Length: 212
Ligand code: B1M
Image (cartoon, rainbow, N blue to C red; front, side, top):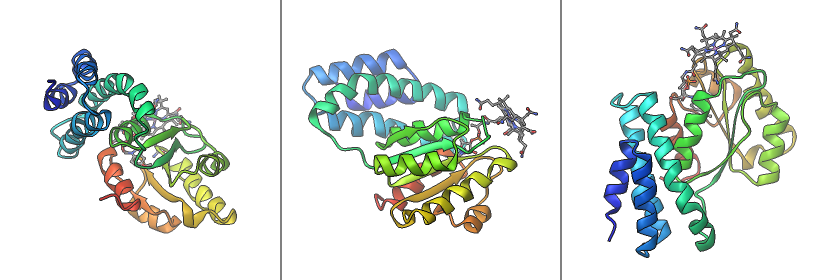
């Protein structure tokens, strides 16, 4: 029987082929897909997040682990789709209007995905209307906006104002982040939360959706 801890270990070490092979082996052994997701892949990614937060891991290690996670997910996703394991919540993610920086946003997406959330990634340079429209269409509980330029942070405020205008503010939590963004700015514009890094973004979304 495949050892789920071995999958986690390989994921933490970024060994993509091993993660894919062992995930397939676990599926073939008849291990529950939800258990493989939670006890092997997500728990491995949680550890990556913990190490990243404590400066034991840096961006390259996180990206390599994320690639390994994706390899495992590629094996598991068709099985999960059949067994109907529900995602923990749906998050619309993007970089603010006029801003092309997407590396930090992608990391946030990977970590959230690793924690079991469904991510609707709108990419970079996303207008406020697009965030609001997509959250409405997809019934997302959270909008996450990244900005790396001081000049594009305003897109966060515009999105919140648009949610208010459209009567959607109570149903959608807005989180913000990116190098120039601060807790103070998040408070000023009425965001529901600010996260300084991708691991904290996962904790924040869990907290806002009362999943802790
Ligand atoms: Co640009 N750039 N850049 N750049 N760039 C910065 C941001 C800058 C600080 C460099 C500098 O001058 N020192 C500066 C901004 C100054 C400012 O406004 N304060 C700058 C500038 C000026 C520009 C241009 C205007 C340059 C020019 O053309 N004259 C131009 C703008 C283009 C545009 O967006 N319209 C530009 C272009 C680019 C590249 C395209 C070349 C490239 C981006 C490539 C890409 O993303 N695909 C680029 C890069 C790489 C950088 C730096 C060097 C690195 C950014 C990065 O990826 N960091 C950056 C300098 C720097 O930050 N040291 C710089 C790594 C990443 C993992 O960190 O994005 O902070 P970060 O994400 C972290 C956290 O912030 C947090 O979690 C992540 C992981 O821990 N986080 C969130 C991020 N989003 C979050 C969302 C959340 C929660 C947490 O919730 C939703």
